[in-house]
Length: 105
Length: 423
Image (cartoon, each protein chain N blue to C red):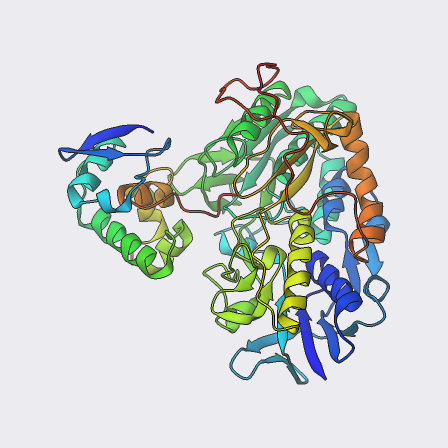
């Protein structure tokens, strides 16, 4: 299992770069994953989405898919793709320290 | 008398109705509610556009598919009142002691901006409905060159392999018409590769290549522009089309949404091993209607059927439920020229190479093209009507079996390799 140093901490990841221990997540870890995926420094809109994903996952027991994020986070689909290019559901979950959203089966 | 009520008489609902009819004590009524007179053999829709099947092969009168003990109420469901334990239709309230939601999924072209504009059923077609598949057949007949785009709008969809099969069959169709060199085939998918499971994705990915099909990955369709005949992604990539075969977004039944029992796409949150609805121990969910993390496919509904039937019998006897469903899925993938691939997998095991259902003897081969697999796919229609729906025993295991399967090393170039560990 690969590990990576994020925010000065050794953190274990799965093969697709998702955290394997949710408790490793900190806002600093999120910033570093964002940098690594080419998103760069996170702005307020990014954080609005990430916070929504974390809260929703805590409530529902699973990370939200992109349709749900667009419906409930207050950030619309078009903008989600600008904030998290290509796969907002997957990318937001990864930065938020959540598992890969299901529904891709 | 007690009441088992089943909403929907597609593959899953019919199997549960007929299976419980054989096993429930006589003081139970079994009622199926479904408004449609005919039962549609959904796997056949893939063949309609190419004229491989004609329409008459796809339908049976619903009355013929249900055992005599099952009462069929031909009405639409308006909602479920889980507090009073009643199903609400336009004419009545039907009380239940146990309920099965088997109402499937439906396509939602209305959810994509512009999809239902001028090009709809002129240049933009679905093949997930009989109407769409038949109109696409006419469009294919008169299509004599240009770019044909197959696009999955988003996941989950029914039968995730069907779009690939469509492309392989289209390739064969145009080769047979000797115009393949004038047709460009493009597959635009929101996934990051040809399929959702890695080993299978490698095999199918290299097959797309061999069949001259271009793939555009992580393409999340946001709108269709009918004026310029262009499919546009949320991140502003554009794919012009002459013919667009869309697999639109899917949702569960409207009444699920209205009853507040569904997730955002109106699929019912389901405990993935026992198949009860989360938070409702008197409601079971089967097939496409559920949010269980497995494929939406008839084979899944069939394998789930046995778990649901057993668990209904347990519930009737006041016993605890068995968490036995393992996500088992079994799909034939048509690859054109009378060949097919067979894949068999579950929640934990991705599709592996080998033979099915028996080790060595097969006769079907897993994750590899063969004529026998294609014959298996065609023979399946007979099995569907005569064995699956009436709930007669089939000589395959309900849980996925490792017999005949070969485990893989982590090998990125699976195809054609022989360095596979013998299980």
